[in-house]
Amino acid sequence: MSMLGGILLHDYIDKLSTITPYLIFTMLTITYTRLEIKEFRVTAFQWALLSIQLLGGTASYIALLPIDSNMAAGAFICFFMPTATAAPVITGMLGGSITKIATYSLLCNMVVAISAPSFLALANGGNVDFISSFTTICSEVVPLLLIPLAVAIMLKYFAPRAHSAIANHQAISFWIWAASLFIVMGQAVSHMIKQPLEEFPDMIWLSIIALCVCCIQFYTGRKIGKRYGDKISGAQGLGQKNTILGLWMTLTYLNPIVSVAPAAYIVWQNAINSWQLYKKTKHNTART
Figure (tube, rainbow, N blue to C red):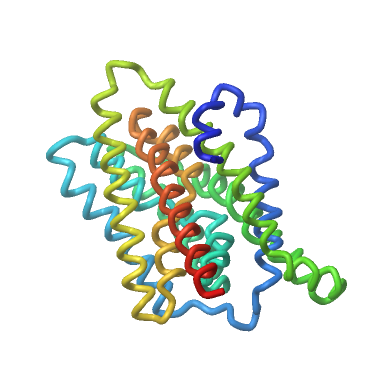
């Protein structure tokens, strides 16, 4: 319903887009009350996901470049986008390890911030200012990742009753996620509609590429996660992307038409997330 509402009411979404970071901040604060800080550590699990993300982006770009440079850049950006800041929320709802996905989210976003100038320079055939790119990505991502974590830790030590109350009401995150999904879907549709009509065939191909890359990453992440005892965290870590940051990177450094790929990725990843949540709810209902 949130996705459909965002599609139908996309003309009115711009007025609401400014509240999205606050919704994500609130979701993460609620989710992080379930974290065990002592379990924060980077392991082979996180490095395996990161290698697939970087190598997959590079390989897909090289493979598609002889066919079409925009398609190659679209596939690359769908792999290269860092893990979504909201990934720990969905992971928690699905029963995965919030600590593992939070650790990977921090690692992944920092690696992308450092490596983005080099990769984007190769993708657009020119130079990308390292300082500008690094500071922009960090300013967009780091506060949303670290401040909710700090708030959750402070609540645990200075307001344990409030911390416990929040930790025991995780269902609130679902409804906040639904609200943010409504806004993000509207933004994606608005963005795609604004593209020139003559670019429609390319938009279709970029959307198909985004779907293929999305499915590959969810599937591969699940396989890697299974090897390390957490299929859900693997799938969400590799498959659920920070598409808003992906849109910014394509619009800033690549051909604007390439931005259709991360915009379409918004639709595909949230369709998969919705299906997974439905299956999880159905399974829990059957057990009770």
